Length: 72
Image (cartoon, rainbow, N blue to C red):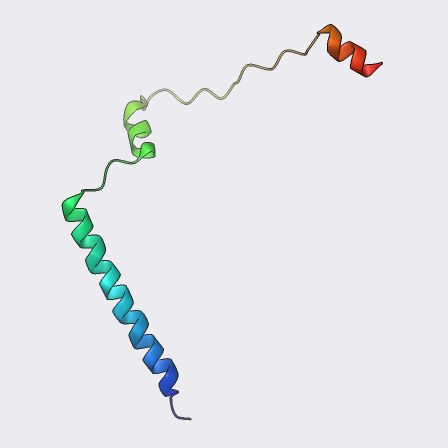
């Protein structure tokens, strides 16, 4: 079976488009270098010896008179 010329043409278009994108990204990175991500900043600020606190304060049950009236 012969190759479909339409598919080959589309592949070339996609390759050209991707090359253009790569060039654009490289140019943008030169102008505005990538900033440190939020996660990277968190990792730097956390002490490595202590684990993250896993316990959260439990919510207190509501004892207002309004919620009691609604239940009736």
